[in-house]
Length: 161
Image 1 (cartoon, one colour):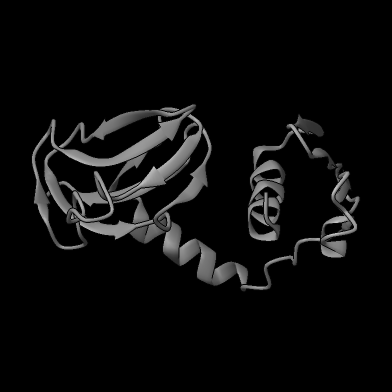
Image 2: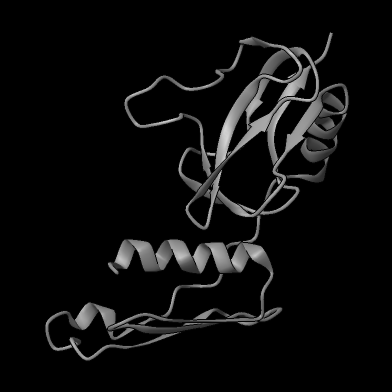
């Protein structure tokens, strides 16, 4: 497990709202604790720590608070209210393509029909297709490819008109 994977895991746990997650693998034990108003703490104990001292302990800075003005948030909510949102049915990893060498299922500006596959979410090595429940035009993709998503997290905005 490299540093990038650990950082990705920390971000995923922070977004999920879990208070504590323990992960034990063959050579790595990770405990991630989060709390309201507290900074995240990760403790890693690894027999091979002498080979890579960067993996002994990782403590990321607390997440930055958004500083956008409230008026801008209200305007974006009004604009988004006319769109239909496709949400994640499960927790997992979001993929826009069926495989790395294939084109994406749907791009911004594409017209889709009800029942069209718009993305795949991988959960525990199972790839679940997410289908659109409405017909319309894709206005915005709200999640980056290969990033973790939560249950009921908005993925796409669709203009049904």
